[in-house]
Image (cartoon, rainbow, N blue to C red; front, side, top):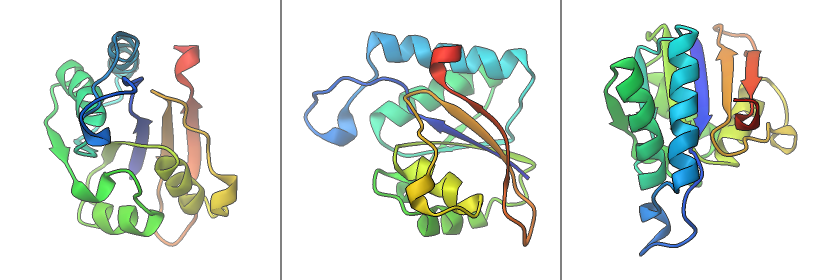
Length: 153
């Protein structure tokens, strides 16, 4: 299974609550760039999961529109998600050949470290709108196939 991890794009610093922070104009551009990258290289997730926070939903929506996908919000992916919660949440979707999860940092970095067999102190630093591609094989640590920081898009 291929697992794509995408941190939400740049968001405004203020809103009624952290969960309601929308993408900034920069974030909307970043989300569009990631969507274009995936479409250009024909990376076609079969399932798109995301945190229900507004900034992740807006990032996921940009990708979903470009790739003709449906966004599935998952409460377990809200900020503060642990690697164990993520693995449990992803568990029912392991039959998907390619899954995209849009979430938060340091949660995605901790998940990637855990899947790669590394301590969470060695997590990947997901800048906003950065994308990682992991290959998952049963009973083995994941393989990092690609890591693309948004500044390279």
